[in-house]
Image (cartoon, rainbow, N blue to C red; front, side, top):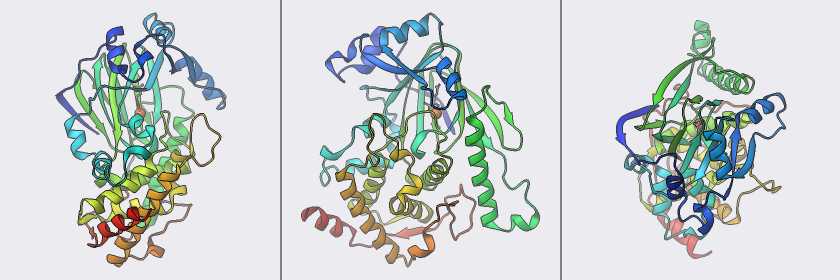
Length: 398
Ligand SMILES: O=C(O)CCC(=O)C(=O)O
Ligand SMILES: [Fe+2]
């Protein structure tokens, strides 16, 4: 987690005017407080901890939400509030390979096929009432998160995994697979524990240590994929943020998605069904931009997420308001097919045998360089020069 202390950021406050500004232009009606929204309520969430089937959200007008929050009747939290303000910090635009990939492929794979979900995950606001506590979770879909508080403050706590090597014998320590499996089991345990605790843990002995940071206006917080965190909001607050993908952290994205799928969920906020398209797009963009190298672990992770997507895709198969068991759109399917062709080219160009990289559903994902799971390593793969031709030919003959 990185916090930039004096970043600045937008000046949005808890006022009818600024709510309208955040929403402005989404729909003609969206600037009105009468528009319907859905928010999480502390009491509903408490019920859901006894009965997992119970809903954690309630619906109402923005006016009702504002009233609940201002009267301190109930801690409520309006998450993933779609916004029209373009607030993405420049530093994020520099490191977000999903943003760059979608831009690089716009002409070849036009926006007609882009899912609204991409817009939804990229940019959102959080309106939070005093006293709201977000239970430990990882952000859905293995994405990175940035966050800027524009009014009020939040106590953001990272649950840092205890060193999984501590309880291992000397002999076990020499075994890379044993160490990685231990870290994997820890992740699964934290996911489980976070679903049963009703109070904010300050420590989970042997599992995690908890580190708090107070986020205030002006600060920019950047969180890598798969970091367990819990959040307490002591006063009425407005925050803006978004999710993004970093190429050099794709091994963490894959790790988090694999573990979360295995744990059958470790998140409290939205899962995003567009990520498989985004991964395909990152591969196609590497060809289009003629980038010649990619970190080997990150490339293998990308290849695994595309070729074995069911093992990583709890996120992609959770879709709100639909019974569709496979929400992947047909145009996404075409892009994934193209990306898979490119992946195979890169594998063979670098002499990598897929049979040795393919992982089992039991997990955890392992690499033959035997570095710790969180280490991106320094090895690179080269991209063959014919990738762009493959993209052009495929798209031309469609
Ligand atoms: O501010 C909160 O209550 C939760 C924020 C958070 O963890 C998130 O949006 O992922
Ligand atoms: Fe979160």
